Image (cartoon, rainbow, N blue to C red; front, side, top):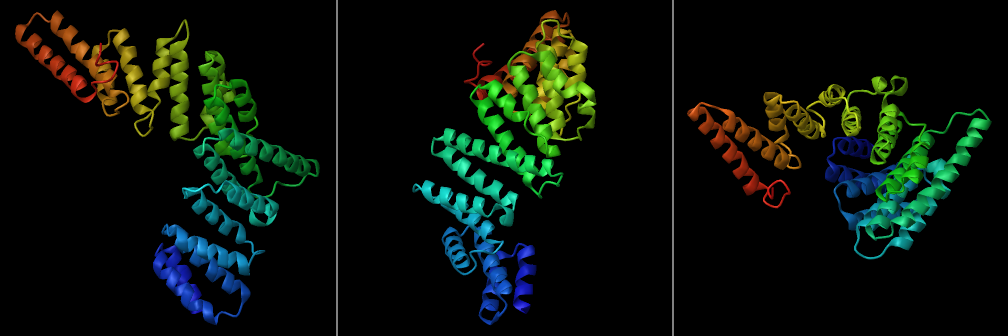
Length: 360
C-alpha cells in the first residue's frame, strides 16, 4: 500500500519512471482489486506519458484482460487508440472497434473520454485522406447527443457532466470541416448548434462571423459580435482579440468604410494576441492612406516581427522613406532617407525574395 501512495506522489510530480517502478513493486502484495487496478492503470499511464508505445500497448492489454469493466478501462482504450493511430500500418478497423467499445460504455467512462476517442479516430481519418468519414462519424454523434439532451430537457433533468461540451465540440468540428470546404450554409447550421459550453460558444460565434465576412456580409459579421453587447461580455484573451480584428477587417471591406471605426477596432487588438502583427499591418495601411506617415511607420515597424507580414511592412516602409526623400529639400536629410529606404528594400529582397512584394 505504501508503494501505491509513493507511486501516486511521484506520478503527480511527473517522475513517471520512478512512479512506474513504485507501482510495479506494489503489485505482488496487493490484495484489494481496486488497488491492483490503480497500480496497473498508473503503470500504463506512466508508459504513455513517456512515449513508450510498446509498453503502453502491453500494459493496456494486461489491464483490459483483468479489469474490462473498470471505470478506467475507457481511458486505457483511449491510450491504446492514440498509440495505434500513430503507427504506420493501417489500424482503422481496430481504432473503430475501440471507439465503439467506448461508446457502449459512455455513461460509465464519461463523455470526455468519448470525445477523446472520437478526436483520435477523426484525426486518423483525416490523416488517411478520408475526412468525409470523419464528418459522417461526427454527424452521427451529434444526432445521438441531441436525443440525449432532448430527453434530459423533457424530463427537466440536468445534463450529465461533460455531455454538453461533448455535443458542442463535435458540432464545432463539423462547422470547421464545412467551412474548410466552402460549404458555408452547412457550416453555419452546425456552428449555430453550439449552445452549452461557454468557451466553445465564443469560438463558434467567431467562426460564424468569419463565415459572414467570407460571404461579404460585413454588417451581419459585425452584428454577430456586437449585437446585444455580446463582445463586451467576452473575457480578455486571444478570442476577443480575433473578434476585434474581424470587426476591423469587416469595416475596412465595406464600400463606404468608416476609417475611424476601422482604426478603433484594430487598435483593440493587443500585443499579446497572435493577430497583433496583422492588425498593425492593417493600421499601417490605414495611416498611410490618411498621410499619417509617422503613425504608419510605427505600425509597420511592429509588423516586421511577423514573417507573414514583414514583406509588406518592408515594402511600405521603404516606399515611405523613398517618398520622404523625394520631397525633402535638404540634401543630407534626403540622402539619409534614401539610404534607409535602400536598406529596407535590400532586406525585402534578401529575406523574402519569392514574395509578391519582392517582385514589385
